[in-house]
Every structure is written in C-alpha cells, then in structure tokens.
Length: 566
Image 1 (tube, rainbow, N blue to C red):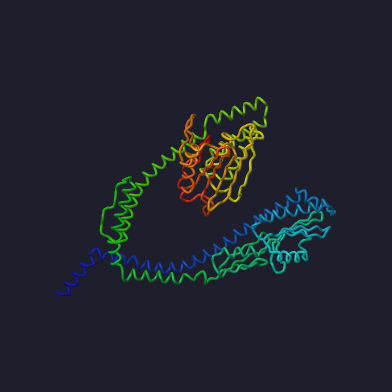
Image 2: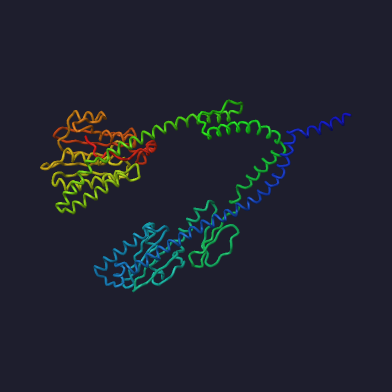
C-alpha cells in the first residue's frame, strides 16, 4: 500500500510543469555539453586557421604595397630617363658648370621622390665618366648613410643594368634595381628588413619569426609564405603554436564548468530565476518600448516588483522618454531659431545696393575699356559669392584673409594711393575656424567710412595669440567715430541713423557667440580724428579650433551681413 502510494506520487510529480521543464533542460544540456567539448577542439583548429589566414593576409597586403612601391619607382625611372632635362644633360657629362647645376637639380628630384616612398628606400645614380655616386635616403642617420655608401661603392650593383632582384649588402637583404643609359646608372635599394619588420609588428603575436628564404620554402604548419616580386625568393612567417593556443585551455575549462553546473546543479533554479526575475521585467520594459516606438510619447512603464537593476532600467526608460519629449520640443525651437537667423543673415549679406554699386562700377570700367579692372571686379565678385554660399558652415581665417586680400586689391583700383596696408600674421593660426565674412565686414567699413580721395589712410591687419586667445585686429588711422555710436556698439545694440538701422557689428558678435562660444570677445576702440581698432578675440582650445560644444551649433547659418555698418 505504502509502496503503491509512493509510486503514484512519483508519477504525479513527473507530470508537473517544473519537473517537465527540468527534464527538458537536462535533455537539452547533455548534448550541448558534448557539443561544447567538440566545439572546444574545433575552436582550437579554427583559431590556428584564423591566425594563419591573418598572417597570410598581412603578408600579402605588405607585398602588394611593395609592388605598388616598385611600380611607382619604375614609372619614376622611366620619366626621369625619357623626360627629365637635367638627367639628359648628365648623359653628356663634361664636368662644366652647367653640368654641375644639372647634377644638383637631378639630386633634388631624387630627394623629392625619396620623401614619397613608403618603405626605407635608397635612390641613387652613378656617373661612370666621373666615377661619381649620389645616394639619397632621408630615413637613415648620417653614419648609416656613410656606411651604406661605402658598401654600395664597393658593390657591383651600381655598375650593371639589372632587373629587380634580391641581394645582400653587409648582411642586409635589399631588393635592388638599376637602369643604365649613356654611362649613367639610375638605381634603387629597398631595405627588406624594414619590410619584414613591418610585417612582424602588424601580426598580433609576440613570438613571430619573419625570414627571407632563397628559393621555394617548405610549407609551414602554422604560418604564411609569399614570393617577393617575381624574384623566386620568399618571405616566410612562422607563428608559435603555443602562443596561439595559450588562451584556449582557460576558455575550455570555463565552458565545461559552466556546462556541468547548468546540467547538474541549477536547471530548476535557472528556470525559476529566468522566468520570474528576467523574463517578466523584460516584457514590461519591452512593452514600454513598443508603446514609445508607436508614437505614444506620454506612455510611462508602471511600477512593478523586480530586482534593483530592472527597477533602475524602468526608471531610466521613463526618464529617457521624458527627456526625448523635452529634447524634441527644444530641437524644434532651436531649429526654428537657426532658420530665422539664417534668413536674417542672408538678407543682410546680399544688399541690393552692394550689387548695384558693383555692377555700376563694372559698367563704368567697360565704358573706359578697363578690361583689367573688369576682370579683377568679376573675379572678386565670383570669389565673394563662392565664399558666401559654399556648403561648409564654418570657414578658416586663411580663407577669410584671402578674400580680404582680393578685396584690398580691388579697392586699390578704386582708391589709388589713398591707403596702405600693414600685415602681421601668425601663419600657425590661419587654420582656426570662424564664421564667414567676419573679417571682411570690418575691412569694408574702413573703405565706407575712412578711405576717401585725397587722404592717405594706413590699414593694419594683425593675427596673433595672446593669453589663450586668437586675436584678429583690424585698425585704421581714419576719422574715428563718435562716442555715442561707440557706446551702442559696446552695449551690443543696433545703431540708429537717418538712413536706417545698422546691425552689422551686432550681427557679427551674435554669430561669433553662437558659432564659436560665449567666450568670444568683439572689442571696438575708436578716437575721433585718430582712427578705429577692432579686436576679434577667439578662445584658443587644445585642438586650435572651436569647442565641441559649439559643434552642436554647426547647423546655424555661416553667412554674415555683407554690408554691415558701424
């Protein structure tokens, strides 16, 4: 009776869902355990194959780059032999001053070509009539150059017409080649030790052996081999099998241990934990993501009991949803503001009277048949609009000053002998990025308010670094401006005049702060009868450019009100 009851209980227990799940897990995990063992063995083999393929790929890539280098050298030799005037003079060597000049210029040609070589390459030419050897290698130290020259002078390589081959100079393998024409030998030496060292450093193992074998080498069990440019000589890469496998035993033990625990100890616990602590909270979060993805921006995941991590994920999701809603509204507001600023700047840039003045000036020059003036005016106008409408939101001080130079050259035609220009430019700062037409504005103002026929005005342009700022200074010794107007400029207010509202300087300061940061300073100093000085001060950051924070504003329009007034 008791035995029958126990048997019935056992049968009933096997029919419960948890037990069935345990049995299913065990039936699944046992074959998985076997597969893990087999996969560990297969993984070792796959790891070795991948290491071999990776080494072969690196070797092939480097030899392909070497072949490209050889092709460039062959092309250079062909051009030098057939088209270079100086090299043709060397073929008729007499030792004259003209020949010495040709020798100097031919040497400089080799120096220029050598600087473009990827590998450690020596270029040389040998004048047999004068027994003169010129050797170029910009990567070698002076003593190394002397040593190579001495070995090369003792070598027969420089006195034979040779195709690409491999030879030893002072126990160093070189890929060499030279051509001869009329007693002038032009050749090259590529240091194969440099090539093999690059291959060695690119392969991600410590115990890597890279060697050069003369003739076909036996296929390596773990490594790679490729021929060096049709020379029937091979670079061989050998890998250390133990190094390739050194992480595998630990990985195998971890995989086997985890598999054993999953099969013997934790099937039921894993099921319960998985269902209650992981699946249910994930479904809650997934449901929230579905609602949010469907456009329900007001949806938030309700509170539920779960572990601290999932509660944190739930709270983070709700905070993220709120932040997305806020950022979307803010983005629309900022986009609208940028569009309004863009429209305002474009309206300021292209003033009708600016175009009419230019066209009238060109028309007048056409009547006077001043074709050179028409050409300069047209080129400046083309450069101005190209600068204005190009796709980049930010330009450089170099581009700005090039536009200013073109404008000054144009104004020289209009105001002959009425102004002089002094420049003090730190060229290291020319790549600093600024909004377009920031400098051009203030130079134009000088010609609008200070330059006139019969008076000589001195204009000074300065670019330098001061106290962590890039400082661009535009000054003149013209009539200056009234204190009332100067004060409105310092207060960042538009200037009211009889002919309308002038907001050019206000607009420039606004764009500087929007595009380059709030640390920008626009300082205007002026004294009546003595002149005006404008200082644009931009913060100098470690990268020499605008800050990352300002990159968020790169959507702002980079145009400037062209006819900005003081």
